[in-house]
Length: 223
Length: 134
Image: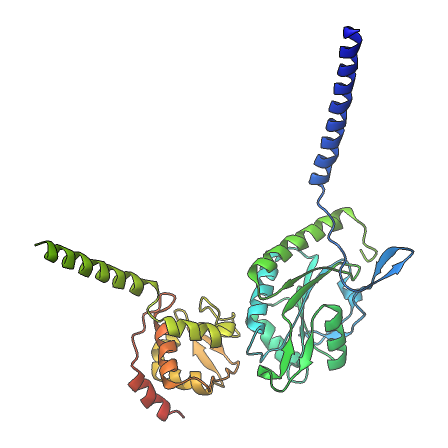
């Protein structure tokens, strides 16, 4: 009687231990593969699944006068912000943070920066070329300074979580948010940060690295 | 005798306190105004933005054109300027609402921040400069 009880106890202990072992194995596996960044932005529910909208198509001119479309950014992570050259408020701080991101991924061809002007009337191709040169950006393929039709830039800003308003009372004539948005090669927004807060931009840089890791292991349709 | 000791002690404590508070930030109002009106473009560390916005930290322009700084703060600046050998050509908007006294405080902060040692300005001199702005 005593023997059988202890046998049973042994069995139970073994069972519990193996469960614990399996649990540890599973959790340790999860730790080695980082979690995927969520998709962000507006979505619809289709059969209970969230279906997100990619950032819309665009055709804009960069600082070299070349037309830039999403097709030219295939296989690249886009890091986008909105600014204007004569901006006396948040833009220089925002561009200083974009410079930090550019420096962090200086040797990573799969990361491209997009700075959209919200003042296309004054920020012409020539003005943007001058601005980019002064920032030390010599290779437009790594950092496009984009201009084009005002309305299409403003609707694009919406997709990128940025708000742009023409406001004659605002310093410089525009009100806009200083958000930096990260878009994956399929056009989905995967991360964003307040481009005026250094700590948030640090997190964004980490998230871009996560996305690069995801590109190593996951097939994007535009790769 | 005891009184003398106490008085000596109190004096040395207040002198030490004064020295300490001076070391912390001698141009407190200038710093606050700088954060409010200048830091967006010239940055908290006075380095500016590469070739688009000139630095104030270690800027030879501040020494060369010291008498112009007050007018630039009030009325802004347009056209090419050369700072530490580099040419800058982005216009700077002025800050019209600053008083003569506030401008003097900002200049004193800038002249002594980030390792700068460009001298102390008096509000009377700044007032004189501002009356003669071009």
